[in-house]
Structure formats: structure tokens, C-alpha cells
Image (cartoon, rainbow, N blue to C red):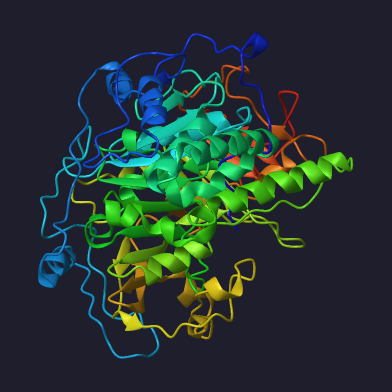
Length: 568
């Protein structure tokens, strides 16, 4: 379900004594009573928590973030806006211009019809990407409470290829970031207790709470974040409001997880997704379950979209009660000496997804663009390759030539028109929805399932994008662009989510190898490297070797443990 951004796998990170070391490049230190900056302009500041917000302004200045952007002080691009309330045709026109060839048909089976054309966008110039996209900029927000996990350097080093479109904003409390950070990865230090303070103040302000209630939120959140860091992920839907002061210069904001390796995102993110839809989420092929994924959901940066979370009681009307129940439960368990006990956690994949559909006037898309590490007992597990900034999934018995992967990785060039790598291959067909047939971890009242997709087979499910617009759900088949699926079965997608695999990487089990370090802890290096990911761990690819099977070379104290019927 929602394996997300508050680490349950502690790793090295803080300097001696808990004090932060000198911040490296792109590390932004906030807090400590600094001056300047503001919470961010609001047309009508609320009067309920003004003094606390003034303190927040002093601690978290937007100017400090702006000046630290890539060390240049360059202003970030203005947010892209689709005029609200404009004619429907004006909002539909860009989609037609970008060659989807899609039409809304009658209810029925989704078919893959018509030959897909070459990657390209007839409505836009086919120019190569420059340093930054001229129209869109996405901020992916990741708050992190506990110490950095050992695999964080792999996330950071793979994030650099997305710098044409995306900035990754990692908010933390006195951690030491990896070295050699890409320009588009920023570690923002909020100081001790800074995340709880920011969460409590911003949520209190958005919900018009009096000062004493906002103060109670801060104390309760700080207690809970220390006891259970993963809880920050429960508030993912509200990140647009909580971190609004850092997001004003972006066309879109989103949430994701840190236990990921990032691929060639500019190849997979489509202009039509950003222009036509308020919400875009990437799944791993379970298209019959319609919900916003914790691993990747992007929002149009507009108040009407960033306020959808207020429709969920546990995040809004009952926030204080819900939080106090969590605190009381933890204290009760601790008073009884119980260390391991079930946690009270409400995923964004339930209520939030349902409220987005009920909000009115919201359009969103769900598409299969991620791989995920699931436990599959008795089945041969695949291998994941990160080669020259692209992520590939290869079956366990596939013959893999790393140089071939490198050639196709280089061929996946970024175009300013953002045509994407999924080519529409059929009509857009209405879907019948039901609360039965998917997402059993989601409360029944929030489930949105398309059981009819399952009757068409696994391939149809995995090659269908689903949409919600105008109060109706739709499905549309697609084809993978040439060069993203190879003859040996290896396939390229936007990113890989570790999910269950990372549970094996502590090195405690007989079959685990842990993680081959990239640099020395705690100052992990984010220099570009090629590597493989398997359920056993992460291993670097020796640059001088080629050929072999999908099984990566495993390491044991720096010694190779061999590959299957060949070597990388």
C-alpha cells in the first residue's frame, strides 16, 4: 500500500552530538532564529494564529530557499496556469493538439486499435530539452524525520536526470545530506522539532484554529513524529498547504517516497498530463484499483486542488481528535511495556482519493509508469537496472547486455514538447465502478474499483490508463514507445519503488547482502553510478564488464559472489 517517506530503517546521518555539520551544496539550513523571508503571500491572512506565523516567517524564509537554488540565486520560473472557469473547449484543445487520437466511445471492452505513430508532438516544436522546461516545474516534497537510510544516496544520484522538470525538496531536522548533490535536489533543514512546528502552524492556520489549538497540534505532532516517524506520510494530501511557502514558483507540486530510484522522468511525464489534469498518479499495473498512489502523485498548484484534503475528517474537522487518539494509544502501549503494537495510520490512498472524485471539477489520470519490489514467494524475482539515468526491469532469466541498456537509455532523449512514452492505442471508454474487487486495505466506503478491467486479462490491465473527468471514469489502452521495451523482455519505466524489498537489506538474514555503499557514511556520495537492485540488495555494476543474465553480481566484503550463467 503506502510505503512512504518517514524512514523505518535508520541509518547514519547526524554529526556527533546531534549537531548538523557544515551544510554541503544544496543543503539549506533553516531555523535557529534567523531573519528574513515570509510564510508566503496570502491575500487574506487569517487572524487566528498571527504571532505564531510571524515566528514561522523568521524561521523559514522563502528568500533563503530561493538564494540556495543551485547556488546561483536565479529566480525560479513562474507557475503555469490554466485559466479557471474558462470554456471547456479551451481546456480540451491541448489534449487534441498532443496527438492522443482519443475519443470517448460507448461503454464496452477497451481495445488497442490503430497503429501508433512515432514519438513526437505535432503541435509543438520537437526541440531537445535545455536546462529547464520553459513552462512547467514540479516540486516533489519529501519530509523526513528519522535518520537517513543507507540507500538514500541511490535516490539522490538518480534524481539528477529529472532536473529538466523536477526539484526534489527534502525537509529534515539537522541531518547530514549526501555529498555531490545534483542541482535539483535540496535538503532543507528546519531545525530540531521544525517539521512538527511547520505542520502544526500551517494546518492550524488553514483550519482557522485558535492559537492554543495550533500549539497543541505542534506538541502532539512532535511527540508522534519522535515515536513513529512514518506518521508524516499520513499528511501527504496536505503538503501543498503545509509547504505552500516553498511552492509558489512551481506549476505543480507532488508527494512521493524516498525508497525509490528515479529513471528518465522527462521521457515519461506527458505535457497533456500537466495541462489537462489536476492530479496525475503513477501505478504499477493494478489499474483496476483507482486511488492516488503514495509513491507518486502530482497536483496542479492551484488553491482549489491543494485544498482537497480538507474533505477528509481525519485531516481537517477531526484532526485534533485523531491526533490525540494516536498520542493516547502510544502512551497506553508504552505504559504496559509493549514495544511492538499496531499503529493507527490512515493512508492518503483511501479518503483522499475518494474526496478528489467528490470534490467537483477535478480531473485526474492514473497510468502504469512504475516498477515495485513485491514479495513473490516461489516466483523468480526480476532484477532492476539503473543504467545512465534510466530504470529497467528485466526478468530473472533474461540475457542482459548492459551496453545495450545504455544505448537505449541514451536514445530516450528528452523533448521540450513532452510527448511521453505511452502512445494512445484505442478509444477512451467509460468504466463501471464498484467498491468490490480491489484495494482491501482501503476502507470499503472509499474503494473505487473497475472489476470489468480484470475480465480483459492482465495485459489489458497493465496497458490501460484510467481517467476521471466530468464526473465519469474512463479507460484507454496504450502502447509502449519503441525502445522502451526490448526483445529480451527488459522494459523501461519512470522509477522503481523498493517497497517490500528493502526489508531484506539490513544484512541480518542468511540470504541478504545489504547495500553496497556509494561513498562512506555518513557523507554518502551521490556521484553517478550504474547499479542493479534485487530483493537481496543493491550492487554496483563494474564498468568494464558486459553480458550475462539479469542476476546481478553480488558482493561479499568487496568480493564478487558470482553471477548466474555469465558475468556483468
